Amino acid sequence: MKRVSQCLILAAGNGSRIASVSGGIPKPLVPLCGVPLLKHVMMSSQQAGINNFVIVAGYRANLIRRWLNTRSFPGISVTLIENLEYHKANGVSALAARQQFDNPFLLLMADHIFEPKTAKALLQQPLAHDEVILAVDSKLGDVFDLDDATKVRREGSHIVEIGKDLARYDALDTGMFLCSPALFDRLESAKRDGDCSLSDGMRQLAREQKLRAFNIGGAHWHDVDSPEALVHAEKMFDRNFCGNPIMETFAGV
Image (tube, rainbow, N blue to C red; front, side, top):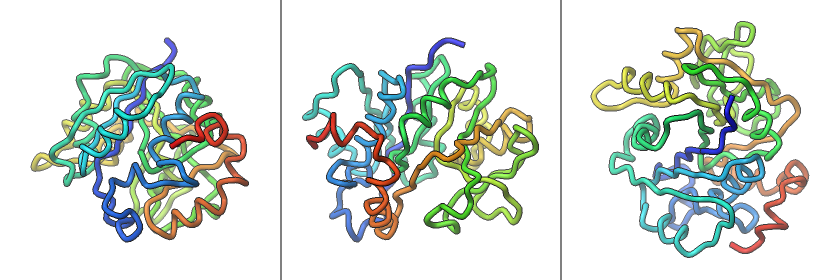
């Protein structure tokens, strides 16, 4: 498989759950250890081999555009797309970037931090032309907010169910996907009244046995979705992400 060098980052939501500490800025710009969440995601991805980013913004997209325009990101290119329907589910944000992707790509959330080695290992997985591979975590007791986490149930290497309210599950969705462009067709077909979530598209892929799981093993990740999650992420960052070069190489915000 050709080396994957493109990444789609969904950064459009209004971050209502973290609004009490965000000061009105978009959640992707909320600082974690002094560095905006979006920069954590971008630099960890670059360390994994990504050099072409497509970012879909929505809520106060002008601030994200300004932030990007006033920073230097050596060795990478960045395209910003504005989703005016950011109040809808995240599948609509993914579809807003459809025309940017003809080849496999990494799909990430702007509020999920991770270790570069995890993304690098995911990018090395063989991917069929019409499937998606989701990085999953089977360490169920380690997640900060299990109730809010998206759960998955596997049969062998395939994911057969995905959603936040699953009664039976054996792993968690880390928000990291290796995707073929076929994802966009599934999202389009999953639309109801012009709206769809990523999970809607993933459920369709699961029914077709086109959604596979990649277990991250002992690696760390964190969904920074609330003030409590931000506090927890800052407490554990130095311990669990000490190998992340962002704090040394990109110390300037």
